Length: 359
Image 1: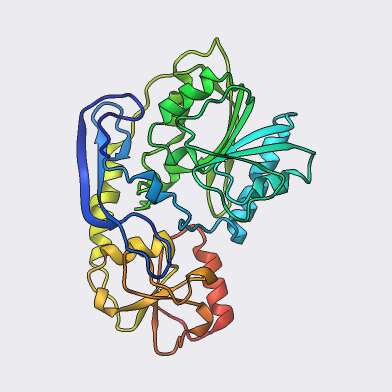
Image 2 (image 1 turned 45 degrees about the vertical axis):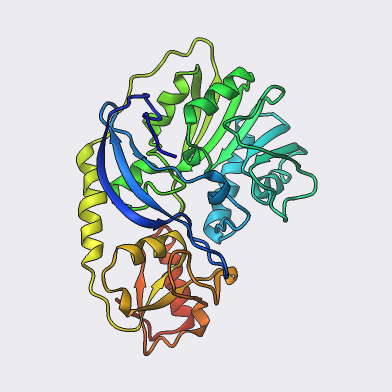
């Protein structure tokens, strides 16, 4: 599927910033699965300068049951607790529809504050979903929201292929309030994070852009909070307001984006690796680093805390993922990824061994 128009302003003219062929569509670890690759092409709208993905992966593959994430790490749990506090402090509502609830972690945390009626809408059901949560299988961009007053999206909005269509749907369903947590994209750009846009985060969802696109459908940002934990995020509450006027169309500095997807990637590709190097962590950060470096023959595998990955290859590579406790740190080097929980990783590794050599 190819994006034909800008998801923000619907302009049809783009500039290609960079393109990478045969890129893995996800960063799971599983055995016996055939990897799917795509052309990872980053484009820029000529009008509003919103960075976005040109080629969109079929959602039935991208969000299949094999999809794996790390939402139960200490960093993510802190985020979820903070987001729940943000929600309960800004509504007296007791009935919620969450889009993409995974195992229902927000529901479990919110029960500490009040009794609630909870429904989740997702493309597949997680086997560990809490039994008290009503489950609806479906795509949020096609769903009829009539009868739902408050909708929650925790790190989901940036995954949408057509956010304007989604917002139009919730408006037509008279959804009065929407709670959203999204990555701090503005900070990601400043930090030159190459994962700003990828197969799942299909567009640059900066604060000005999300406020603008909601204003098109008379949703006003009533309150917001900037979360500065490891997974730095914006937490927002939008309310349906008939008097809300469309905000001014934002734009992004093209040079900052080029600095990431041309200059930063060139820098990574020129990293010189020692023999017997392991990349840490696995997942999307390790996968991106492995794809762009040239000295792949010096990489012997990945290190990750996620037990579900151990002994299995990282998607799109032939390298296995190992537990941090089974590595001979005296005779191997560690290439540490720039990721939100980098300090947490370093602290954990030094608890295992004092002989760590970072590349």
